[in-house]
Length: 335
Image (cartoon, rainbow, N blue to C red; front, top):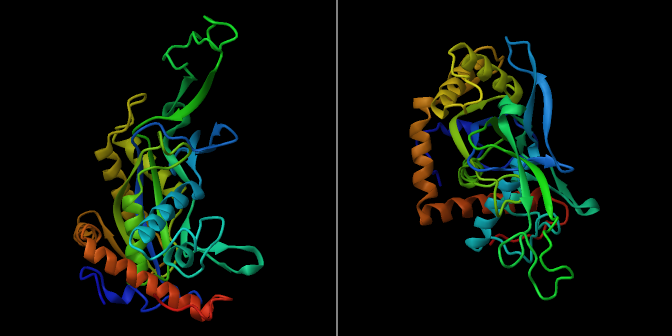
């Protein structure tokens, strides 16, 4: 069953191959913060000292979004959908506890369970970097823990010191809204169903980083996909090119946040320019050329029957792969 009419079928395998076959699809994503997320390790925001641009040789600190901070929320969204439509249960497959080894999440995103088996991820995500400097991209908040009366003063009968002002105050750095992280998500050796599965996960994921129930709102703005016979540029190089472009125009007016339209224009222009220097065979669907595919994907993923068919196809492919290639899954029967 073919779902897409806007993409040449030559870019997809008819089944998931066991060995690398040199087909890559790269999702060009701008991750935009829409609240105050936390991308942190050991209580501090992740950041790195890097060169500001390709041409601008100034060294700056940039916020970083590590690869697992990106891939984990996206695969969890996919797992939620699989459970919702009866293609996976929490009992048979629990993330980082017990993997079923034969569903789209396990086969596409990979798993490792000691001696029981493992599968390398076919989704490659690298660290993403903020376009703007760390100093302009975060705020320090003072956090508190009020009593039940809503104030910071104890009035309860059980309090040892009624009227005492609580000392339960802490400070935490948060990333500001409207901070942009250019990120390329790569899927190796896609089938049409696995392409749609990963595409849908990126579009649907809304929360990244710590404390995702209260903050961490992030929107993924896709500007294109690139089909190629190898890996393309890094997130850092793309980010540096965008920084140079924005600085030249100029729309980099610190401390004002970047305008999203300017960022999308810069991201589109720079990726087209950078791809001209790549030594790969590639087909680019970027900007206006990407819209027909995006609209077609949205038509599939917003129609329940079409979505279920796509998920079922991805699940059938995963179970077929597991039966052939995953140790201990030789007796898996397709649902």
